[in-house]
Length: 155
Image 1 (cartoon, rainbow, N blue to C red):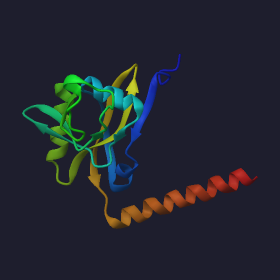
Image 2 (image 1 turned 90 degrees about the vertical axis):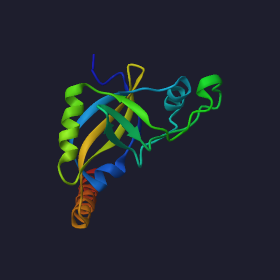
Image 3 (image 1 turned 180 degrees about the horizontal axis):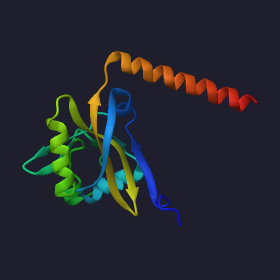
């Protein structure tokens, strides 16, 4: 059985790969309420501005928009859509992230949110901001690849 068969990508932060040079990637679980996980399964997620920071030895996801679930009642009903969410990582991984962010110019961004065996996971990456000329180079590579693909399709 293919190990990626039980993975469903819910949200992908394409802007992060354009704005940053992505380095080491980590998979983290998330602490969610019942309404949030249902909203994720429905695809009401936006990771455009999401980033991770470490506070007192714990990783927190900030600015990730998870829409409210319309049918939620009780505790899950009044949850903010852009609240801080605790990430579940090993201590070694948190220590690596802290060391990486202490370097000048490095940050930690959320790149993907997906369901793996029914559980919500977020992929985070250590990233360094690109300069303007790096962005132009990325656009040129993407355009060249598009032209190559188009030429191969026409054959």
